[in-house]
Image (cartoon, rainbow, N blue to C red; front, top):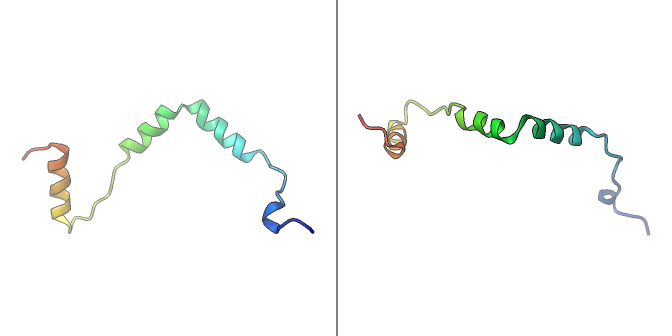
Length: 61
């Protein structure tokens, strides 16, 4: 009996390892900082949500 099609893996090309090494060299701190500082777009027509987030973050006025 032969293996299922999902059990036949192709030889790895090394692209995934290359991507992991690139991330490791940059340092995960820089990656997280970039994601954390990325602006989040909020719809201007949903003012209730905008005000709730402003209060939740501790901003007054």
